[in-house]
Amino acid sequence: MAGLGRVGRRRKGAVGEENGSTGATSGRSRRLGGSRRLPLRTVLIIVVFVPSVTFAPLLASGMYQLSSQWRAEEAQLDLATTTVGGPAANLFFSLDRERRLTAEVQATPHSTTRDKLAKQRAETDQAVNAFRPLAALKPAYAQEGLTDAIARTERGLGLLDQQRQAVDAGWSSEQKAFDYYSGVLESDLSVLSALSQTDHAEVTSKAQTLVDLFWVVDMIGRQDAVLARGWEKGHLTREEYGLVADAIGTRKHLLRSRVIPSLTGNETKYATLTTSKAWEAMTALEGRLVTSGTGVEGEQVALRDVGPAWRTSVDTVTKQLVELLSLRLENVARVGYTHAYQIFVIFISITSIGLLALGLVIFTSWRLTSILRRRILHLRQNAHELQERLPDVVSRLERGEDVDVDAEVRVIEPTPDELGELGQALNLASRSAVLTAVRQAEQHRGFQRMLQRIARRTQILIGLQLKKLDELERRHEDPEVLEGLFDLDHLTARLRRYEENLVILGGGQPQRRWRKPVRLLDVLRAAQGEVQDYRRIAIEVEGEPWVAERAVGPLVHVLAELMENATAFSKPLTPVEVRGPHRSAGASPWRSRTAAWAWSPSSTPPPTP
Image (cartoon, rainbow, N blue to C red; front, side, top):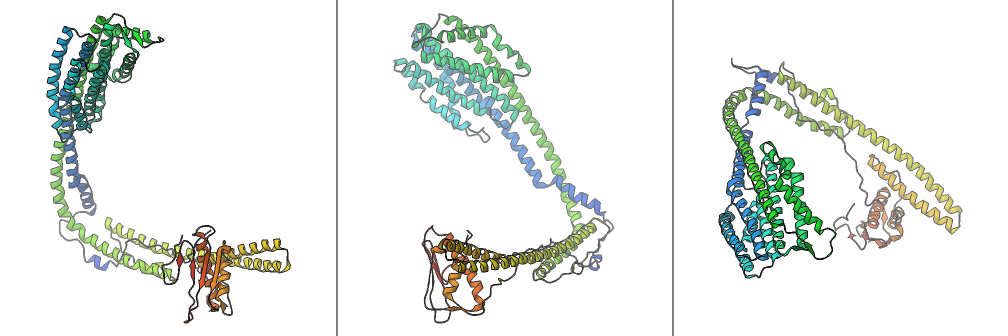
């Protein structure tokens, strides 16, 4: 149900745009003087196109963006190729070899293997010492996430000595050592991955292949480290077998779907990498390993004595991958630095041309502005006059007065040039604005008249229906029939109130009239009868105050709307109390109270929907 009804008129109108006109007498006295007067078309072309091409803020913004892009790309390339990329790559290969040798020492603690591990640890220490200063590096144009990745790697390297001591003392298990080295290598790979994200899309795309190649090397290193545990024992545990199988699958996916398809130029010779003898030997040994572990129950997977053959093939394949890595790095650096140099050349060219153009626009603008300013100010004055006159026209239309469009529009006398065309456009705009306002006012009045006619006709029918219902109520005595008639009478009374809303919206007044004063109690009951949940409303009036006959109809309508609002915006089944205390001064303020809110003439109005 609708809440508190708010009635009023909707105003419609059209407000004209800023246009204006006075006559051409004063305009003729402001003609341009001087022998150097340029044609208006030439002046407009210079004023419009020269500033648009050489506008100073745009030039400065372009120069700043180009300069920033050039510095950012060069800084990111330096980080990726030398400052961070070099130490990160050396650390990666050193840790990868130390991971394998650590696994071999834990599986077969021979003196020769320990000597190799000690030598490799020394190389790894050099790589770590070269990497650690990067933690304090804070470059201005660093790739996103690079600082965090370096910090994670540094934290992992902080446990390197502790891990080595645990391996030497036999406290660390093979799996724990493997997990430690693999975790540090993953952190280092996150550094390389962050370095690949540059501001140049082509460099980023090509650098991603570099990261994928590092992951391929890491997958082979994982296989190598896990298999190093089993060569001497002749078997792998089921968990170790799963690690090897996962590394094989990941490596094959990276190579087939990401690395090989992205090779271009001089890198295509490595497209046949997977068909080389060393690669085929390695994959054949992997195939035997995977086959031996498939369909076999138990916690162990047997390994054949092919350790030397595996070592030879893996070393050869790793060497080929490192060569491909180096070649791809050179190509990425060449593309990146070439693009950065092109941006620098463009920056210098645009800066030089822009500064010359800026000087030109400052000179021409200073000379031409004074020429155009006089004529433009005259048109602006006319537009301001129109701006002040149009609201008055609209106000008169709203009051119902007739307006003559031709009399209200003051025509600006055009001149035979582009500014004259602008004056003619102002004439058309002002006439269109006034004409639109007049038409909309006429349409609004017609709509009001039509709405009133429809509502009046409906009110007549509703009155006839109420009269007929009264006859039927007096004629029938059956309680069920009377209850239905009362409900129908109640619905019709509500419909009458809604039709009165339409009459008010159409600018009219309700037709219900009373010839004599009516008691306030009867007024409240009449309003109660027009509310849907009238049974929830309890009325209490002190004394017998009366309402003047001319105020009965509006008061019934307003009270019905307020009661409807009270029932609609209170909890279901909550009683609504309407009280009308008697005042000695003759006024009879009323009070409506529910469990949700109370309102009286001295308080804030109740909430409305």
